[in-house]
Image (cartoon, rainbow, N blue to C red):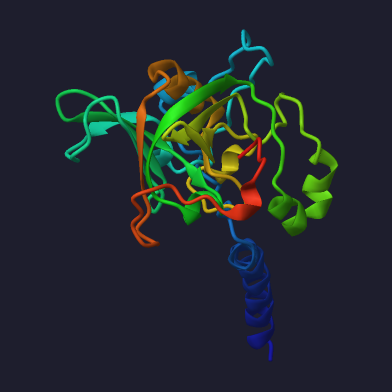
Length: 247
């Protein structure tokens, strides 16, 4: 017993010191020392930042468009074009959500678009019969029936402005001198570019429709490709669009 007592005292001290050393390690095993991964902001090409920047000299000063969440393929760019259309023609590909302005030497300016219900219902050829800066918008009776709370207050027409669904510019499509009631226009909903949306024809970023507007004169030919429907030699105009001033 006299030999064991000193030995036990030494062991108790050893265990106490060992516990002091082990405790921080044990606690470290319960608490993660790693920080949660932070979302990585997508780098945006400064060229696009400038391209979709503010336009303070517009009739209604236009703020910059937030393109941080936009799929880059829907941003304006020059691309190769090997289609049959002549330079100066607008080609609208509703399935892939692109609008092309055909240029010389096998090139085209490509814009991203959003396609509304009306835009998905037609295909064919037309010409730009009229151009308007900051146009007025009037919903169709069909649009009012579909979304009365949103559209009925504007049955008499909505003045031009930043909240107007036609945006900063509109190109009105005609055939044989008659208004087809289809439009290529800007939008107050830039998030809809690249999407299929409930209403409207062919919508573009306001900065893009301003750019297109400046490049094409009245009389420019327009070809609309819509593989989701039967090809049409003529624009199809539904009866419920009579008197329509907007989309």
